Image 1 (tube, one colour):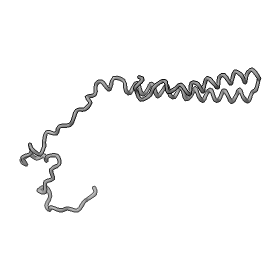
Image 2 (spheres, rainbow, N blue to C red):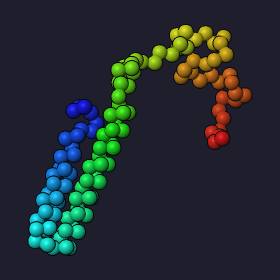
Image 3 (cartoon, rainbow, N blue to C red):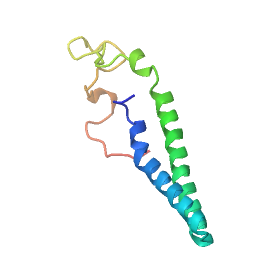
Image 4 (cartoon, rainbow, N blue to C red):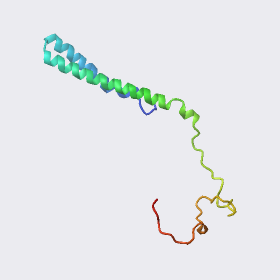
Length: 114
């Protein structure tokens, strides 16, 4: 999925942040600084939480994309069956883009919002 909307390599900066927070946590434990330990634990939890959210986004995007691209016909144009060349006026349906004045009792009618 390297050419998809979401790529796992985009998670690398947050993984480096979590690794840096864990290394700083280890150093804070060695010097026995309680405030620094708590700060680095919160930073590591935050980074790992973002990584967990990114992984959930990756899963949902890959599930949504899935095999849908192979089953959809792309580039198929809509071809209307009633064009101006095939319209005789005898049908009840009007041709696309044709305005007939005969459907109203006057040629000009004020715009009405329904």
